[in-house]
Image (cartoon, rainbow over all chains, first blue to last red):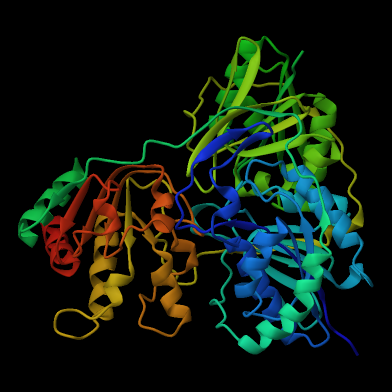
Length: 269
Length: 343
């Protein structure tokens, strides 16, 4: 009996976190300076979602992981060179903007269309994964819009753990306020899961998996359908970098005693 | 003309929590500025006490969805309740606190009502009839002000971004809105709440100080050995004495998954930065952490920043901290604990 899941992971690309980002105005709204040449990575929380999906798929034979990504296809191809070496998955690529200044409602509409178009989609086995927020817009709303479009009424956000129970129900731990977690039990798919950091380490690169994935990924990227993702109805009055630099006082050659006293005074002050 | 709805959930004791009162203040001020109709909508087991608390806010209608089904923070029931309240209030702008419960359900409700949702909003004001929202993009790297023509507009205000509203509590009449739930809405059941795995309540959002530990605590010390056990003892003693909030860099949390020596009480929940949280505390002290950008963007809302690191060229020295102590954190923290124990 096939107990496998159809796990669809949604994730876009974001600028490498080590890059300096600078907003610039464009005729279509704000953008990042040199955005098209900035080194990119798969969104960190979406990455965790992908690793969790692959882990779950390994535990449940017959499962399949599909990554659906809306990103400029040339940059997505570069990112795939790394991500494809981590875990096995199929890619569905949509060639569109991955900017943080786009509207999540438009992103969700395009994602829903892509997911509904997946061959053999079985809602009884469908798990829709993604990052609970992105490192670009950081809004945490796309997955809920997507859930509504897919008519899925069980949504979990800030998820650290998902365990399949013996009866097929899903036990989910979500982050809530005060460093606590909310535990829920859902009778089964379909569900939408917005992952936080999860519990798994980053998988090691596996060139064999990479070659296997890339054989299918390259043609998919070549065929990637263009989608228009904008921010209709939104008008940006300003986008600015905060004043980041502080006048750092560097204390060298002070004894631990002197430093400790200064810190204690500061803490109590 | 705009019409404002404040949407909140009740605490276990039936009252309005701090984030809800902060957002109620924003909604009340906005309604006054726009001279717009203003309603309060509440979800919970019982909503009367919370409605009474909001009596003085300027709201002219108090709506509630209550009952045992609405005590659980659960997408299906919360979104059904919020949808019913929004339809009853017929508001164009819905303001809600950015709590985990409402962040989970309100974007879905926005979709049902053909609206739009903006979260993590830090300011929401009207100026000469134009309503502007302010929020951060790219993980607190840039801040934008924007307007939206789309209505209804759901706006979730970040906790801590506005002053706490308070007013005189008095009895108000609550219009109870009936919500009939399909069986599918009970597919998920909340089974409980858990502390972080370590069992230590070391994440304290209300603490004055954020104490961050970096990977350096588990590296080899001048004697060529790792002193993870000593580090744990020093850090836990400091936490006990200061009741501070404990944060960590990603690299330290990740070491555990890679089988290297770690501090046993840390989990991903302590992680600050690009893939962690961005807490709000008046002061922050970083130890044995290099202060690189992916981590320090999580410090955006820490007002006073100090760091202890052996490397005078570390990220903190490059304008990210107010003070960098170039010193051995083991020695300094040991002495700090001694000084704290004397007082």
